[in-house]
Amino acid sequence: MKKVKLFFAKYEWWIIGCLALAGFILGIIGFKFYFLKTTGETKSLFDLMYLAFQLFTFESGSVEGDVPLILEISRFLAPSALAFAAIKTFLTIASERIKMFKLRTMKNHIIVCSLNEQSIKFIQDLIYKKKKIVVIEENADNPEIEVLKNNGVYVLIGNLTDVTLLEKSNVARAKYLICFSTNDSINISIALSAYYGIKKQKMSSSCISFISVSNIRMLSKLKDLDFFIDVERNKILNSGQIQKYEIRTFNIYERAARLIFNMYSPDVFCKIQNENDEQAHALIVGFNQLSEGLIFQFARTGHYANFKKIKISLLSDDAVQINKFIKEYHHLKGVIDLRPINLDYEQFDLNFLKEIETPTRVSTIYICIDDERDCLDFIHKIKSLLHYSNKSLIVCQSTAKSIINLIPESKEQNKLNVYKFSILEETCTFDSIINETTDELARIIHNDYMEKLGDKLDHKRDSHQIWDLLSDEMKNQNRNQAEHIFIKLRAINCVAKTVGNSECIYEIEKDSEAIERLSKMEHNRWCAEMISNGWVYGPVRDVQKKNNPDLIPYEELNEEIKQLDRNVVLNIPNLLKKMKLEICKLS
Image 1 (cartoon, rainbow, N blue to C red):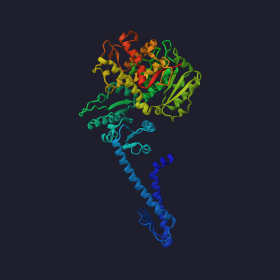
Image 2 (cartoon, one colour):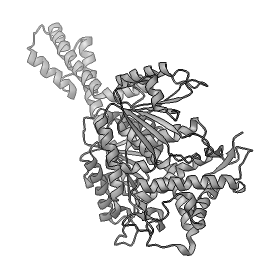
Image 3 (tube, rainbow, N blue to C red):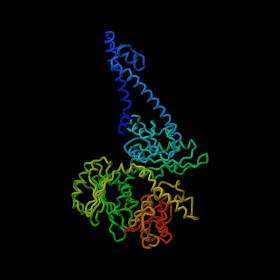
Image 4 (spheres, rainbow, N blue to C red):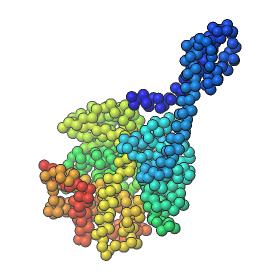
């Protein structure tokens, strides 16, 4: 039944047109038979067409005598088609007016700008989660528009950066504005147009804009420049109300890398719980935005209980691009052991793998090859080479519709375990892009930090601001700390479970050895975060020069600074409790 409704909704005007045409043709044939039968006349084609046209307005259908069946059908079909079209038009106009009225009173909805492969996946997830959605699209002929309307989505057609159109979408009362255009400049213009439009109206808005940035390196540079700092500083309006409108940037591949790392970090497959455990070694095959994102993620968050830099072997046939990347992000060598390998994928064999694994065994392999055929060939080769290897293979594909999706997943002891990650399906979702869970925990971390500052609170310091006034760099530091909590838990053989769902609750404050180990992990993570953002050691803290005296090994810190790291660890149970989670020890 649902398929029938969707079919009719998609082709109803074609159906109405066909019925009208059928009524017209049957009218011509019917009148021809009628006059031949009743008067013996042979009317001209133009006369018959004129009479058939009049059927639509009830002006020629009233005839005397025996009426042929074809004309009888036409006398009802033609005006019915016209009446149905008129009613449909009226209802469409009325429905649009009602929708626009509802839109003016709508709040806490989600506005999505531009329809493309990424945004459509995102909207489908919103529909599934029963969110209120408004779409702004430039192309009125986009075939997805009718499908969206039939799913209750409000669709506005026009220039994406038009302030008037953004006002029609009621952006001031929206919860989120998501800009999915493939043009970064247009996305930035949309977000800024919305900001200045809200500011002009002098309305208090809590809308958060998410701007899709097509290139992961551009994303990094925008964050470094604090590009939207004027907006993020939440200027006070003339009305005295605080403008809470916020702009955030995201890149699909950066988000995908975060998800892949959280799900398939090397320590998920091979426990890393003490200093004697060997160096974590990941092999990334292919060089593109996703592999760049994975490298950045390993640099920020891949800091384990063995206190060794994670080793990343980057295998690619594009030596020029890899060398450019390493030169541009030379500071990464301070936090990860990155080894570029220039090799044609066809030349990969067991001997070459042995060279890569000297002296540290590869535990996790991430396949990030763009070309589907090359990707399939490499997966086929590596599965045949490493069938019995106790390694984990994560195949990263652009979409679930890829032929690579036909490769079966496998999870068997002492064999090559295969996992698949569909970038669009996993990343273009409400949870991934909006990321409310991570942000909620990050906000809790920052608020807790602010509460504990007490008399030491200094509003002149960038880190001593309320969450809404923090720079993007500061917010990301809290987000990365939130994500690293789960690596810390795995380091002590623990997990976070919903409160009340476990009997083996672990009290970390009673384990001094674990506290010291996790505190050192936290310091290493923090140092990597700072170095990745361009900070260097300096005897005196200087924000402008990005100097910090604490960028030294944990053992060299004074007790006061060490205690700050210990406090982060001791605070984990309290933070998780606010998320209705508790720490449980695994058997």
